[in-house]
Image (tube, rainbow, N blue to C red):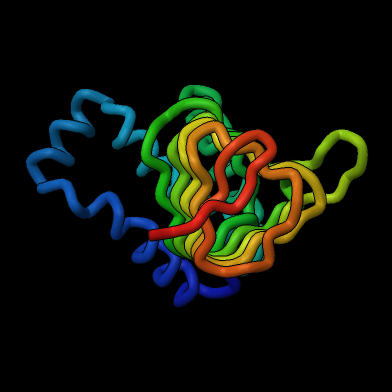
Length: 185
């Protein structure tokens, strides 16, 4: 969670590492043409600023800036199909595609999470329990994690995997409906 300006810089540096692979020319063209990857980059940056103003700044200006960032994030999120609340992801969030990404506000995901689009991290609908996920999660396109479960570190979810049971092990690939562990080679 971002608690200071130093934390904000750390989070932004980790998040932007994914987007820095593009040259300055490519980033300029993406900005001018409003390319989705530019908009996703902008969304993640606004999300981190929203977290900073919500957690670290309690003065009047901080509250005003929080509301401004919250609104900008929601407007851009509606355009991209994202609903990602503040304080859910650790540093290093990378979103590869625009499209539906829904995250429950109580879910907690560690650092270096990679989302490929059409993902959901939330409760099952039967209870309000939400997932707690470790570091280095890679969610394939269409992967879903629902319910009060826990996932370990370095987890890869295959495309369209539906995770409904905990997997506390590290270095695991989960695939299928419901998702089951596979052997890594």
